[in-house]
Image 1 (cartoon, rainbow, N blue to C red):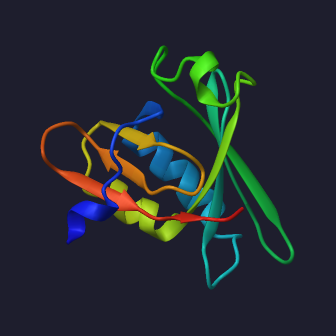
Image 2: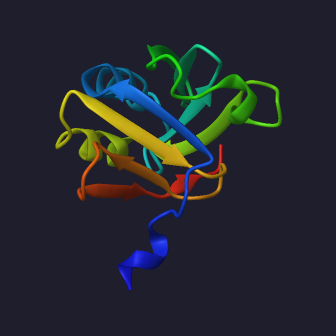
Image 3: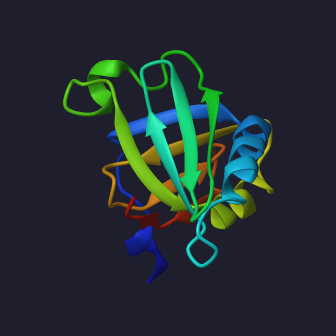
Length: 130
């Protein structure tokens, strides 16, 4: 039953431009570990920081999200920051079929991330430990 993996509710939600996020993930995923393609997402009060580390290199990119889509008090424990990890290749695949704006919804760092534009079309990306 696929409905079991679709996150219920959304403790945290950001809206970003699909192309900007895809460009950032595409940049950093090339230095991540080949097997897991792990990319770290650090949500701050004003931007989303996308980063990855490999054996020899590290890369980081910053993506601005729509103002008001992730109020600081709701991001994580009042600190205004929240970190989660995803497979960069899966994120790129999800973004490839999205329009101009995409919403990322999540409940906690170990829960699936819902990628959607609104409407009924939804994609789920499972988290990685970072």
